[in-house]
Structure formats: structure tokens, C-alpha cells
Length: 427
Image (cartoon, rainbow, N blue to C red; front, side):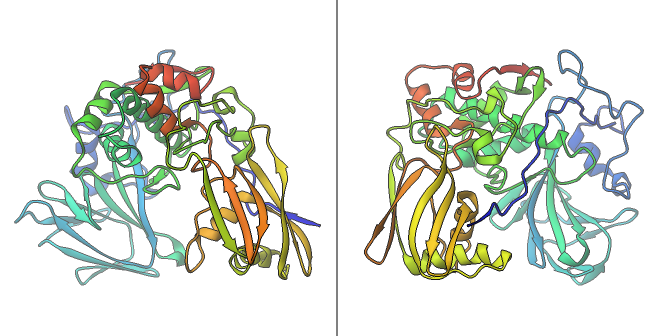
């Protein structure tokens, strides 16, 4: 029998060091500092740091970061692409900057990314560029972006496009996309704001010399720009400004998900993380009203075989007609780590994380909503009967909604899902 996980074990570690940006110019905010001059883009993509640039967080985590926190780099896309940027304010031109020069171009500008070069309204560049509107924000792919837009070459892979802006200006665009302001009570919105801030801060800390820290999709946490942010979300972010979760005085990767289905999954089970109380499995008790508290998915045998074959082919394994699918490794909380697949040409074990990813990449994508399920053979295929939606690690968003509706405050909600943690204000 062959077992293949399909991904390297991710080694995660606690972080206690943060790079502090030195802001040039009297009274400049972090955002203003990044927008003032292209020369501040260093050759390795890092801002110029002062002599204390690698200073550790003090006992209160209160080193001077400014009221909006550290800069966050959000990847919006990569590869070979064509994108249009337009100034939000009519008549405002768009500034295009390189390391040493800048141009003011009429809005909109069209960017075409090729291998080794990028065209900006007909001008060719082979070095990183930055875009910003003379006034107001930029509109891009249905998003309104207030930060700096940067494009960086990625060898032969094309170009990566990023937005960079301060943490507190980034968070409203996350909270508004991750949960519903109209149906989540203020306590649940505040819990989401702190969890999202902690997650983003963790990734800025482990990538201090990189421009990109997170993605704008579920690969990290969903980000929708700054347009049409509900007042309830703005209030939740402002009320928790600078507050993050810490365990043993250190920032950690505060995962969250839509629905756990009654009990959450440990980080050890799903992500192969070192066991820790903050990401342990806990009973939820409040997501039973969620749409995907329980679900069923019937997969034709040919579809399942296609998904399994896409993974197995990487290891030179051919998959015949699938005869039986059985959970091979199940956690105490009911999450399946591996499935045993018996087929006409043998058998193998496949990680459920890998199967979920393969199903979602099919020509007609299929969502296996979680890894908490059982499987039975039915005529023509297999029936998955499961619970929850998402990886199941950390805070259950629908559970947080239920706890808030029952009167729990945001700190109670966070302590419930992230054990042995405390909330600390860092800026």
C-alpha cells in the first residue's frame, strides 16, 4: 500500500521579533512614508530600517509601530496577466514609480505581465514598479484599494502583484468578507477582528524581509479591499485596535474557519503542527444552526477517480476503477487525515487535504466541505456524509456567532476556541 501526503510537513514556530519601520519625514504615518518616494523601495524589497530595526517586542509589546500597526503585504495575483487600474476620483492621475524614477499617467492604466517584463500603458519595465493614485484610491478587479500597489518579477513565473497598507487599514476588508456584519453580533465581529489581526501579524513577523505576507483569498484570509465596509465592521476593528492573541507571551498562527460541526480540529491533525493548547480541539456547542453543520456529497466513481489520479500520477501511480474508500486515520475529534482507496490496480492512502484540493481543481470543481466525514459506496459512486465547513482549526466562525448571540463577550469567545491565550494590545 502506498501512502503519500502530497505536501511537506509545515514547521511553524513562535515569533518574538518584529522589524520596526523608520519613517522618514516629520510626523509621517507608515502609509505616507511608503507613498512619498520610490527610492524607499530597497533593492531587496525592504524599506530602509533604522539601527533598531530588529528590536524585540518589549514586555508589553509596545514598541513604536504607529497607531495603524505594521505594514501588511497582500498578494492579489501572480503569473502572466493583464489588469486595469483606474483612479477612484475622476481626473486623478496614476503615479508609476521604479527605484529611481516616476511618471504620472492618465487613468486608467493597463498592465500586461510577461516573462521578464511588464507593460504599463505601453511602457516596458523589467524592474519592480509601484502604482498609486495622485488622489484617492485605485479600482482594480472590482476592488477599491487604498494602499500601494506593487508588481515584482518572479523569475520565469511572471509577476506578482501586491497591495501594501497598514494593518488597521487592511483589517476592515478582511472582517467584512470573512463574516456577515448584518447577522453577527458586535462581540463576534470583535473576536473575528482580533483573530484576523493576530493571523496577519504572525505572517508579517515570520517574513520580515519580504513584501508579501498574506494572500487575498482563503489561502490566507479573504480580503475585499476598502469599498462598502459596514459601519459595524469599522467599529469592531477600531474597538480592538492593536489587540492580538498571544500564548506564553508570543504571537501564533490563529487559524479560523466557517463551521466545525460540533467540535474543532487540532492544528496537529490538519496542518501537522507541533501540538499546542491554543490550536487544540475543543467542543464548540454553538454552530448547530449553521447551513453546513451537517452535509452530504455524492461523487460519481469517475469523478473521484479523476481527483485521486491527479494526485497519484505525481508519484507514478496509476489508479483503476475505485471499489472501496475507507477512512484510514481518524482523530479523536472525528477528522479524517487519510483515506484508503482500493481500486482495480491496487490500493493507496491519500491525505484528505490533498483530496480536497484535487477535487476543487477539477474542470468542474467539487467542494468536499471538510475532512470530518464517513464514506459509503452507493450505486455509481460514493456518498460522503460530513459535518462542518473548512479545515476546522481554531475559531469556528458560526460558533462564535452563536456564542455572541447568547451573551458571551469577544474575549470569552476567543478564550473558548484558543485555549491558554490572552489578548494583548501591541499598538
